[in-house]
Length: 412
Image 1 (cartoon, rainbow, N blue to C red):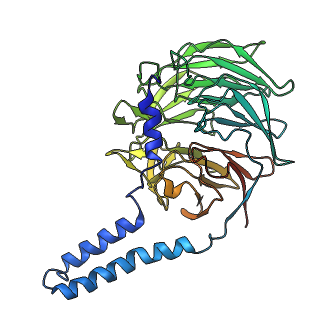
Image 2 (spheres, helix red, strand yellow):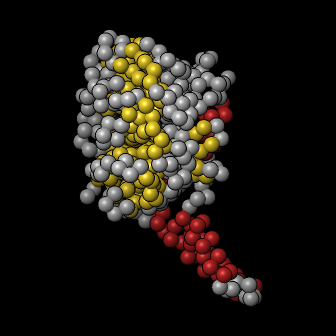
Image 3 (spheres, rainbow, N blue to C red):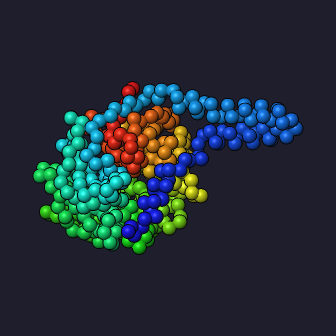
């Protein structure tokens, strides 16, 4: 049995529960509050009240219904591509130096964790299997400067479930090699490639379910590389984001710490191997996205927040001031989505709840506006990878009845 079955179950339940944080609900409540405040409802007879209710319902929900029937606004087009060999979710995906995409492990709805790697070839739009790897979920995959892929940690079928296990994928020989374990077992951690070629791995949960503050560095030199401890964060966190800033420092935002939705934000300096507290998020959250913009700012969007509730709110971090400011929220609240920078805009895809799993949104930093439209399939627990031709490969997700992969391109 799973050591932490509640974690997998909770993620699947979130993908089965409709969000109440929709614009329709908020609009309805605002109209109702105004009607009561202006005393339009209280003195009315029943017949008049019915008319008001009908008008409120029509004004609130009819536009939503019509927009669902209307074609997607121009901005992105999505084209189906080859089906994955294994329709995985909770996998990782990395663009290789040869232009192909490596998908590592993950799980499916039937057989459980998948002990395979899969390769996507954009030229042919086809998938192929690429050797056996450690079967895991909630791991990280990082492309190294030497072209190899470092896959670290995660959750296994066997006991103990949370592993410090590490493998390297070599594209030139299409082989997997086990290398030195991390110093600490981790799942739901974060990893980022530093400017000096090392990989920073931080946070996550251990097998006891404790949210970790520790961090470590992978040094790729030599045949198998090596690990060393580095400074610990001041706040333990999992399901958070590490974002490499323009100046080479790393921003750690949000996360989960026990029952706390973390708002604390820290910056790691590779030169001193220390973490420094910076301005806090306006809303504590986890399972969000954090994207570096061309301006050097960082856009954080969506996730799970206090109550709990799925968030539509978005905010911007300015490294020059260390301050977060609110920006235009997503059109639809979502968590477990993916965000990809494409042509200076942020493309958000899929996520939970189910009514957003087959949708995309595009944020324009110049106007602070979001466009939205429909994907061909539904994707949650998926990956979104920027390809060499400036298109986005969306692959997998835990809605196994849907199409498993598609490619998106900006239309203007």
